[in-house]
Image 1 (tube, rainbow, N blue to C red):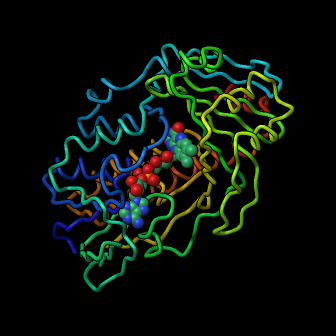
Image 2: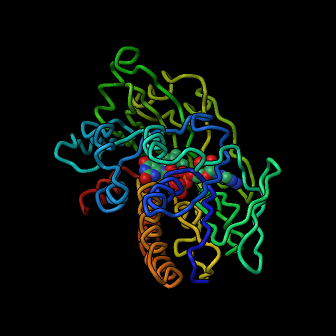
Amino acid sequence: MSRVPRIAIVGGGPAGLLLACRLQQAGRAVQVYEADAAPDARAQGGMLDLHAETGQAALRSAGLFAAFQQLARYEDQGMRLFDAQGRLLLADDGVGGDRPEIDRGQLRALLLAPLAEGCVRWGHALTQARRLADGVELAFGNGAVERADLVVGADGAWSKVRPLLTDVRPQHAGITLYELSLPEVDTAHPALAALVGRGTLIAKGNGCTLFAQRNADAHVRVYASLPQALGDGEAAPVHTRASLLLQFQDWHPDLRRLIADAQDSVRPWPIHALPVDHRWAHCDAVTLIGDAAHLMPPAGEGANLALRDAADLADALCAADWQAAVTAHEQVMFTRAAVSAAGAHAMLAMDSAEQVLQMFDAM
Ligand SMILES: Cc1cc2nc3c(=O)[nH]c(=O)nc-3n(C[C@H](O)[C@H](O)[C@H](O)COP(=O)(O)OP(=O)(O)OC[C@H]3O[C@@H](n4cnc5c(N)ncnc54)[C@H](O)[C@@H]3O)c2cc1C
């Protein structure tokens, strides 16, 4: 198949939308199928810092960097590291850094803005993908059935496209994050606003971690990370603020207030990962990018890699011999993702703030 392929992208997250922008700019017909019923059907979650070589480079390639800079919070790049006793081991105010923050909802809106009306078909949750002699058939939960020459799985951790390429499934990585919220932190919780500062707070001890991130609109998101062993398909245990506080009972009272003073709702994020060197044999009709290709524990890289994968795949798909270019792109992506995944697993294995400090010192 050397003619220009009809391309279907499954998933309208960072990877799928960046790819759609780039292909549309290149004059290619492209359709995105997204499970969400509408762009704002669900909250998109916390913030992301975009790195120069990956996330920022991808936005530049799509002509979106100036618009990104309008939203990017260069002032929120700070980092504070505490141990469980509340000792401050590292305070970096982030001034002069090049990892500006953006909220996920803002990033999604930024990527949707240039797309033509109808490019994203909302409310299309893929339920099954089937290989045909000349492409792929996609069946959706709403009853729609579509065909494409090439399907790009950008449908995240539990990709329904991935089984066309591999039987490998994500496994629980041994921790679950419990997300809590502190809205209007400057006025409602000034002491916690001062504790977190402009950016991210990490506190570690006894195998548990607290992350607190300052998002736009003075909203602080807190993630309490607990070690757990979950089997395949097993749900994470439910926690309330009170039961979470028991897990952190030996911690300094100022850090415990990040949980105690938060709103009641506690959302679990069981963390799953694909094998560090996950890869597949090339297939001209199907490929994967982002979390669908290389789900890893959160370490500040996943969305950045997803955006960079999409930009590189767009370059490959616009090459004259696109099949060869996509094959080469996949090899580069596999290697890049394996390095980041190894780092993410190494971070996951650290159980003291001192180890995290050593890692930062070595960077
Ligand atoms: C708690 C947490 C914190 C994180 N923090 C960071 C961070 O600070 N920095 C960073 O770089 N990364 C971070 N990550 C990782 C980052 O969120 C992901 O790597 C990134 O979102 C991957 O982008 P993606 O486009 O590949 O997938 P996703 O963002 O997961 O997007 C997939 C899209 O596909 C859609 N979809 C799913 N299934 C279907 C289906 N069957 N049919 C149609 N559509 C479907 C979804 O609705 C979604 O819109 C974090 C992850 C977690 C869990």
